[in-house]
Image (cartoon, rainbow, N blue to C red; front, side):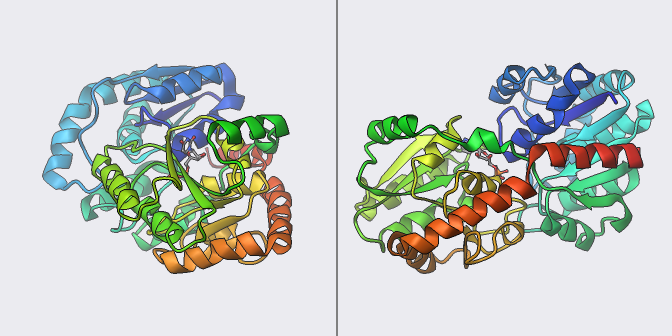
Length: 379
Ligand code: UDP
């Protein structure tokens, strides 16, 4: 099967990293069409996945845009749609991986007479999207998609609650290659030395810097933890959240935590960095659609504390393979961190359960097989 994948982003967020794993087995039968240039293109090339940047100017529409703005954007998109229609005729299927890709893919699917699959990586609720954007996404999916793949039950439920069709949506979790998360002891030691983390109890936070990812919650929690507890914040403001980055630095200064919080920016060595941590915290203040970092921490055999909402609740069973705390509650998070610091045996058992459980549930080969099966049944 020849697949034209579409993704709006030039930068690699969770949806883009997931796309790499899905597109890879198709080799030259796949083409990833991007709506922006950037480091995601480089990552695709490193993975030998054919890629083409179909548009170089950024698309102005934001997640919270209204109708008039949306219509103007649609006009600007016409040359891109035209290009996608022509490309799509050489493929069996259009696979839209983001919301703007859905808009372009839906129209292109109509004109090229190619089936459309929409991979839904978002919880379609007004917490994240304007009413207009929600309606556009749900209506286009209902009308044009042969299949919607939701990245969790939480994303599926939100889609249906927003008016999405039940008969076209299936849940498929993100897949991971467990062996990519095994780090080598001497590399971990070197990383710990370079980052001056030796002898500390290190809490890792791995996410783009954005208010709803809740890095500020971890910083507040840290102020309530013993002094040996240190945090590394891994990730960058991918979508222009510079004010939030400023706020985080101010918060660290105000709480006098400069020696206990390190901002590492965007990194490509996530498994190694996770291995250098004692635990991983996930602190999203809004429901997480899936939460790749949670599974990644499990695959690194690290205890994970996740915010109890959305997809995270499908990944973590409290006390069994991780810990769940109320979102947006630094005190509760601090307590959970201290438990991990003190109850080392129980915490190690939980981390062990997590790696066994995650290696089985999220194995990329099984997940890719599931997707291939769905595509062959529905298309
Ligand atoms: N990530 C990364 N480098 C960073 C920070 C994050 O490669 O500096 C990766 C992280 O390992 C995870 C993804 O970005 O695979 C984020 O996915 P998640 O589902 O956690 O959140 P999203 O970005 O999709 O909201």
